[in-house]
Amino acid sequence: MTTMNVSLPEELKEFVDTQVERNGYGSTSEFVRDLIRREQDRQQLRGLLLAGASSPSGPIAGDEYFAGLRARVNSAD
Image: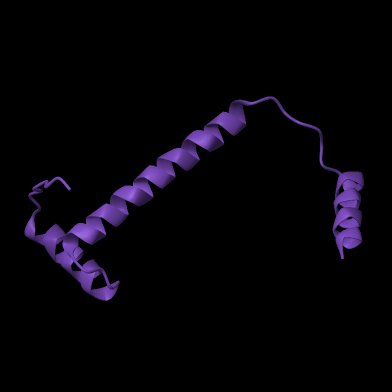
């Protein structure tokens, strides 16, 4: 694992220390790794949402569509 040093103002350091203590992180590094993973997930989700928003529209999911789903679910019982 690689080491990275980060300088924080005292106010942010206190915030991080509080988060580590309150949320059961084993260390400051664990907290920062979790934040980075969450940001990666957020960016991936954003990319998927943008791709979906720019894709062509599909068929309309109306009453008939949902009735068909219900029938499939009920027949699986």
